[in-house]
Image (tube, rainbow, N blue to C red):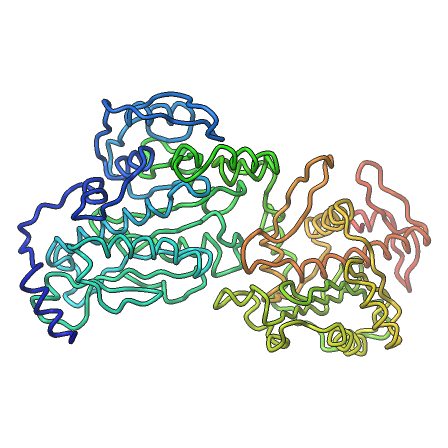
Length: 588
């Protein structure tokens, strides 16, 4: 059908002239002429609280325990919200008596978070349509376009809320025939004013995408939804970090006379990052304009889960279950770099990586092997006057890796082997040989899992300085403990590598079950996140550190009481290094 015919049909059938009354979001979501959805009681409570609707105190419904094994009580909407407040699962005991600008919904998997988001987004689009001329209503320029944004860690994740919203709109006669330019990443809606003027361009839009998409920025946005926000990248060095994305997209929401909404939705993960920060702000501030709910899956959407499945998942891993279905932030996961400013003091932005090494310097290599999804990374470091210096850092990924999920990830330029479905060991051997010619490596370290075959290929090329070691929790913990102590004491010097620095800052530390005081450091459990270059760097530093420590012992070092550091007491060249001098340097 031609565009002119669509506009003509809409003009005769749907122009409201502002005569229609805007109904409440629950009525719109559940009415046959609206979205025709069936909301669960807890979902209704969340939406009612967000829009300041009174809670029902008559009809009772059961609320199950976390594994849906028993009913913990019969509640009305009003008593449920009061119970949530008393158990510190909500920051309001009843419908808030002030306008709510932001919703932080902490909920387990399969709890219907996407359905709640679709109801809110669809309702806001419905309100804009019934305003007739929404741009004029909000004092915007005549040609202004009003947007609703949905952002998630990846395009695939963002598609969940987008598809749920489109499905609901397709059921709604008030909205479905107003859609134009429907794509996988956005659709537009004609307002009454667009139809009256016979405009070919609709002024209302819903745009969705992964957090790395620059197309999401710079819009006049009335609703901004962050889906699975707890799984956004969490480091200050990335333009796609949770903090940066939130700061970039939310300011324009304020320009809609208090009607703008920010939705922060996610299953919980670690007690850090922007999602946890917004949760903490909402729970700690009195009379907050942020509404917080923290609910488990069986409470929010019991029809989607069976008790047997929930019990099985809990038996397999209680900590993981608590986060994924229990709606609880993990006590075992934290950011490895707990003070980004402290770490960034070791990054010298004026320091450029050397093109070649020096013959009288001992260089140490760390190698992390990955041939399909994981990358292969190589790092070179050396010690200079008690400081471990980064000389070389590279990582390569095959075309089968998930790093290409993000349009502009930190790995976007690591494309040398992207044309291959799998990186070959021979390719990596050639890379090592080339680097060895530039930096005379004395020792190298790699993971034993893939190391045997690699060692044989290297030996065939007369490379014998690498050793393979078994990857254990103890070794991983020790390597990263040393690395952290070195950056804390500013005994590292790094150039501002666009991959290594943000990757290190995104690492998570997870305390493992059954191993006291040991924590595994690794990349976040998110699509496109990796720790390959960090592993290679940490191994190189570990080798360099231990070699210098052994050398210090041989040459007369002694431990400083109470600090466990070694200090040199010998002559190097023409310089006398005394214990007092090295105490100021805190050398190892």
